[in-house]
Amino acid sequence: MANQQNRNQQDNQVTEGIKETAGAAFHAVHSALETTENAAMSAVDATSNAVNAAAEGAKNMVNKNEENE
Image (cartoon, rainbow, N blue to C red; front, side):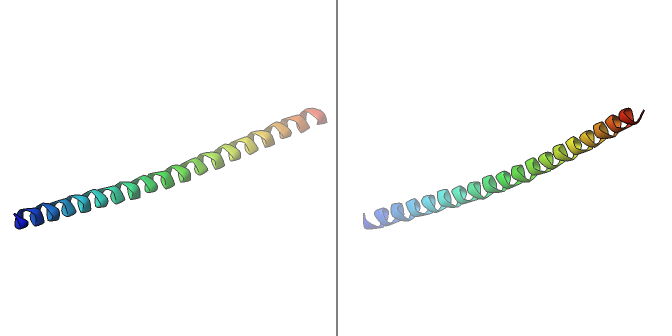
């Protein structure tokens, strides 16, 4: 009977180890995805800012040309 209890306890420890490893792997992947998302959104923000600046510059050029006419 003691052997059976010992075997069950070892099986439970193995199961818990697998769960903990899977949980850690999931957390690592989730963190990597969040980091990737943050980098992508930063790139989108930078592109948006550049487009807005270019559009504003073009608008200013047009306004100056109209004032000079």
